[in-house]
Amino acid sequence: MQQETKSTSWHLQEVIWLALIGIAFGLIYWLMDSVYQVTGVLLGAVGLQPLNDELTLGPWMMAGPLASYLLRRVGAGVLGELLGAAGEMLLGGTFGVSTLLSGVIQGVGSELGFALTGYRNWKTGLWLSTLTGTIVTFAWSMIKSGYLHYSWSMLLILFIARFISIFIFAGVLVYWIVNLLERSQILKKR
Image (cartoon, rainbow, N blue to C red; front, top):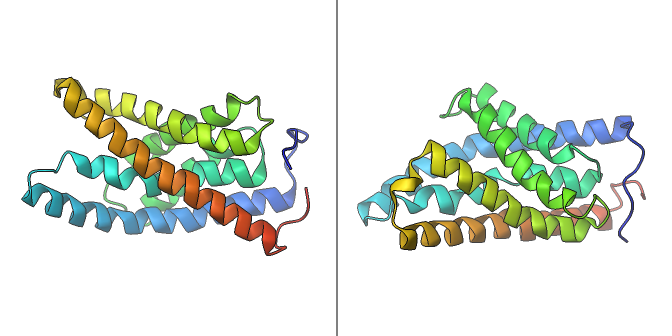
């Protein structure tokens, strides 16, 4: 079932799917803002607030891998994540315009997994994207959120928690969504 990358021109159906992913995840990401606030309070109450970013990042990383795995196009991951972030921002998301930068970083992180396979083995690319997405976003958190001040053991705990969240949401859940869409016959055969 693994296929080569198609021509570089996008078809209308693919653009529509990309727009639908952006719209749907813009809404999901906007809803995640409230979840993030609540989990931050709950984790903070028991002294585990630093884990909030890690445990909640998975849902915010779904649009990129879904766009890449579903559309099988170079750049679809970055575009999908950026469109989702733009939707969140336009809905009045908590993080404002910085959401766009996060969307680009998350999109690049997930896109790298597919690039490592040469955009040829999409299933392997999906699983690699969970690791590359974790690494890239964690490196960004090291800079942006001051993770450099944490001990090595705390960094390891945070990294593992982030990877698990991304693996479950941007890996397993994305894989299931694409399989359901393919089985539903909504997608044109590639």
